[in-house]
Image (cartoon, rainbow, N blue to C red; front, side):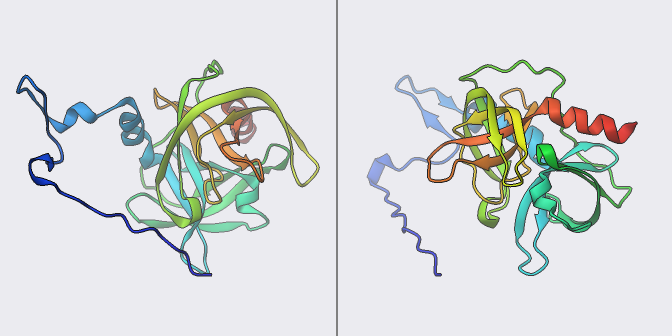
Length: 230
């Protein structure tokens, strides 16, 4: 099916045309573009290098997301992203493609760990050590929805303590709910607070609803990584 896109009209009306990167106040003060470096921008700059794409071997497009949580190349993603496959091609933000092997699948919590086969040094985003979160706090997601690589979305932490029943029949408890835009391809990607800390792994949306998405808390990611290190 052909996708339809609305065309954006670009208008420039005389003196109202502004140059990107500068804004002039009534007092005549000029602010450099760095004044637009918000906490959200800082999170993206800090964390996006640790986000990877799982590549579809047939289409060459990103089909899922993962997070590098350890300098040795360990990636956390969703179990439903890896499915029954044992090896993958993953892509880094600089477009480098590397092979990776599944290390462990923790299906009851829809989590999986994949290991990159390389000695390359990586940016990492380990799970937050603190489980203190605030309902209403601002959060950020990075992922590849519908193959649109490294898409940023923001929202708030809507609720905690949700119970989500998976298609497998397993139930995930203590799940976070967020109104952050999450779509197919975001699966396995990070949800971060404004300090750039990994507070969870995005994994599901409420079908037929708007702005109801769910995230597996960082504590479950830490528990999975402990089983690998033992």
